[in-house]
Length: 253
Image (cartoon, rainbow, N blue to C red; front, side, top):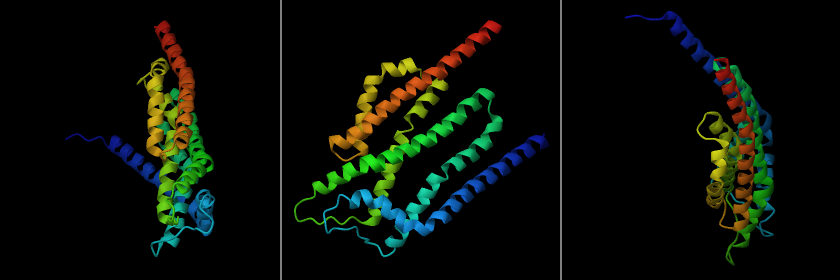
C-alpha cells in the first residue's frame, strides 16, 4: 500500500490550523462576553424597551420560570457577544481559506465578507429601531378587553432573536445575488426578467416573518426589494469584469 507522508502531514497541518482558528474565534466571543456580562440586565432592559414603550400603563413583563431573570439576560448577552465578535470570527475564517484562493477570488471575498457583516448589522438595527415599535404597538392594540398584557421575558427574548436573525439574513440578499452571478448560477439580466416574481416573493416572506398587518409586512418587503435591486447593480459590475477577462483570454489564445 502506497502512502504519501507529505500529503498526510499537510492534512494534519490544516486540521491543526483549523483547530487554532476555531479556538481563537471562541476565545474572541468569550472575551467580548466577559466584557458585557456585567451589564447583562441593562442590555436586556435596552432590548425590551420597544415592547415596554408600547405596553399599557401599569403593565409589565414577567418571569414564569424561576431561573428566567438570570438566564434570559445571560443568553441575550452571549448572542450579542457573538454578533459583536463576528468580524473577528470572519477574519479567522478568511485567514484559513485565503491560501487556497486565486487572486481574483481574494479580491471578491474580502469586500463580500465586509459587506455581509455590515448588512447583517443593518438588518438588526432596522428591526430594532423601525420594525419592533410598529409590531409591538400592533400586538398591544389588538389585545381583547379585560386581558392584561404581561409578556414573559424568555418568550420575548426568543421572539426578538428570531426576528433579528430573520432581518439580518434578509439583508444579505445583495451578497447572495453577487455570489450567484459570480459562480454562474444566474445572470443580472435573468434576475431582472424575474423581478415580478421577486416582488411577490418578498411580500410572501414579509407575511411569514411579521405579524398579520400590512405595515410591518411592507417594512420588510420594501427593503428586500431595494436590496435586490442593489445586488443586481453590484453583480452587473462583477459580471462585466468576468466577461472582459474571458474576452482577453480568448484573444491571447
